Picture 1: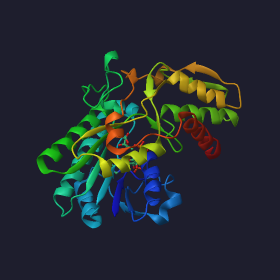
Picture 2: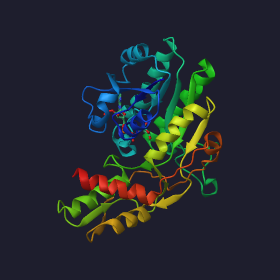
Picture 3: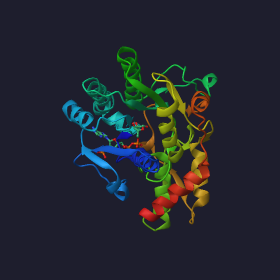
Picture 4: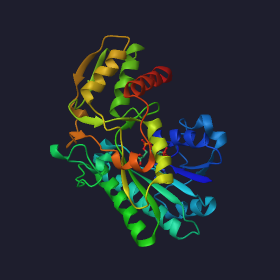
Length: 317
Ligand code: A2R
């Protein structure tokens, strides 16, 4: 079985590649750009096949799909950072929406009928009312950032291709996920890195933090990639599924958890630059639909995820 991962050099893509390699009979393909940083996948590079492709370029995507003829596509490539989407909204919409459109069109122009998992996000829900928590897939989508809008676009485009052309899509909406290799711009990883730097005397024992009140539903990335695989095996095409733990933490609680693991005493300081123009206050998901369809449940406790992430930075720095 040929599986293509777009975004294989990224955080989730690299974990998914490892997971697929552990499965019998799955041949793993991935796309990279000429300047992609491949450090997340260097340890498995001889077990996967990489092809150069930029998803913003239709002809480049077309060639990849015709060459590989994948049976499954895990579409993870994206401008994945909410904060950057405020600074580069057009780039975010182009990469995320037009990039996905190029893949759908390439599938239509080839003799293939792959099952395609679309990596949507809880950011699609955006503004959530108190009486809407835990959030179900039927909740209204009120995105609060260009990134959130781009993910709604990806989600709706997938729905439309399923309806119009019977493209076999599964629209996953993952809530926050983290773990080793998470980029330092993401909050939990950023805290873990700052602590590791302080432990190594690379910075003063002062941590900068943004909005600590927001509440998020966290899952370990290693549980998330299993869910993505299961989504392509067991979910109904065209449907949307929340993937989350169903347990929320405030960012303050996450900070306290990490500080409790720190080997040194740390002072915490507020940094206004880390605040977003509009932030989503609570994202807590209802994973009932997905668990029922697939039998999936997250098994890695968040404390273990946080500890592994802190150890990742301790080793990397
Ligand atoms: O930047 P690169 O060349 O290392 O590749 C990134 C890839 N990517 C692209 N690939 C091809 N053409 C593009 N125009 C393009 N733009 C970005 O997407 C990288 O391999 C991946 C993004 O990785 P991360 O930023 O680490 O994202 P993460 O956390 O793995 O998220 C995976 C998916 C995304 O769709 C998120 O929006 C969603 O899960 O939450």
